[in-house]
Amino acid sequence: MKALILEQKENQTLAAVKDVALPALSEGDVRVDIDWSSLNYKDALAITGQGKIIRQFPMVPGIDFSGRVSESRDPRFTPSQAVLLTGWGVGESHWGGLAAQACVKGDWLVPLPENLSARHAMIIGTAGFTAMLCVMALQEAGVTPQSGTVVVTGASGGVGSTAVVLLKALGYTVAAVTGREATHAFLRQLGADEILPRSDFEQTRPLEKQLWAGAVDTVGGNVLAKVLAQTNYGGCVAACGLAGGFSLPTTVMPFILRNVRLQGVDSVSVPTAKRGEVWLRLAQLLPEAYYQQACREITLEQAPAVAADFLQNNIQGRTLVKISG
Image (cartoon, rainbow, N blue to C red; front, top):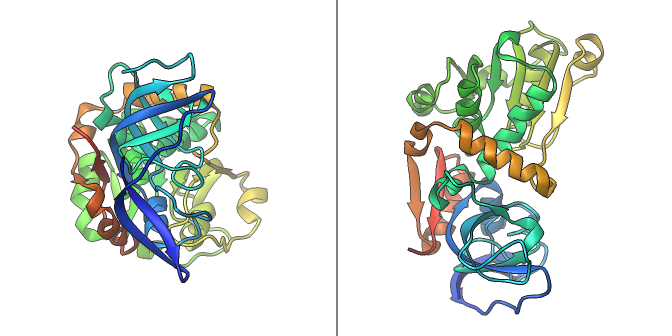
């Protein structure tokens, strides 16, 4: 099969499209013909070697994909069945979706919802899946549309932009934080009621004026610290990213004086049963206009160059990788 292969030589990560052979299926495994994959921030770190995402080489990156079953040793899946995959370490410790085929455990796959195409599934992708988990975390914490405004940081990225759409579809008032003025029209089109510059979140005090009923944070660092200091009494912040750094320069004040909840959100190891629920909600909630957003389509050969754009903050919305068809 044709695949983007990452190899390491002299502590440098080298990326090239090559023809390689997939291993034979083991019991419980499924082979999938991949139609679409996508590029995410984690993929960009892996492909460029800027993050310690991959620890064994050679590796095929790509943390998500959609396609059809070609061969199955899992009774739950049959040939030609449409499926998708996100997480489970695929593209990190197990060969991933930037290839013509993938061999994965049946437990890792989710049947594609009937009203969702393979391409639409990758417009959503890991980013949209994570966004839905964040929104569900806010709902489970009791944050309702009547509670007040929800702020989304890194709002022009894949997770942030989808969170804006989902929150708006559920009736929330949404404030979007972005570091690029050029994305303002895009964010308003998605449904943002207010747009704030990222520069407003660079400095913070232990407690600030209460502004947000809840938050979806994809940035971390000083931005997350500022959001916590501004969250209303009893509010919740769903944190899922570290684009701005993994440190958290905050205090206990928001937690012990305002009863604020900081809810971590992981999309890699979500149990199989919950994954199906999340994907059904995504298929039901996302409006048709969401799939009309600007989505860059690239080939496998273009992936290394585009990965570098991610780290330069030059990506808006989703980047799809067309594998077949």
